[in-house]
Image (cartoon, rainbow, N blue to C red; front, top):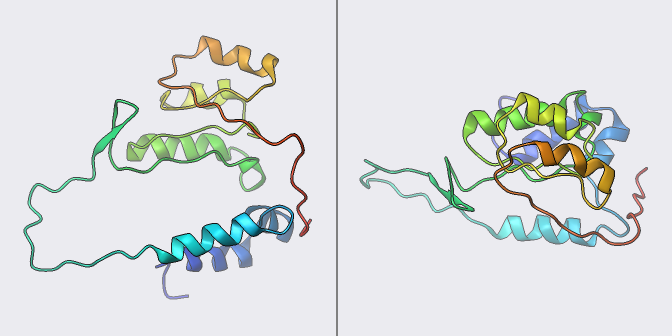
Length: 162
């Protein structure tokens, strides 16, 4: 591969380098994968329009999210069990988010504890672990900017590849 240019290039590289069990976890959806395919289809519809010979002086991707300045309108979403890909996956992702000035969201299914991630990175949009009340206790002692909570279905999805 001459270079990584597209998301598909990254996917193919991961497929060659990452153990199959971990790759399948990251590159699949639950049950019939309907949502997975719908998301892929929707992203394919997005077209970036190239514009040339225009004044780009003073352009910026900076904006505000939840009243906080960010470098671009991008956030790292919660990805469960990032530690399967790298032992300190959530900590590294939080560092990258901090470096690039974008929000990071810690997953309920994180391998790293909320305290470990908070100790290493800026408290930029992390969230405590869902409804498991004992795991939210460490979060109360951290100076978070925002707490994102989301609800989930009562049963975990079946991952057919695994």
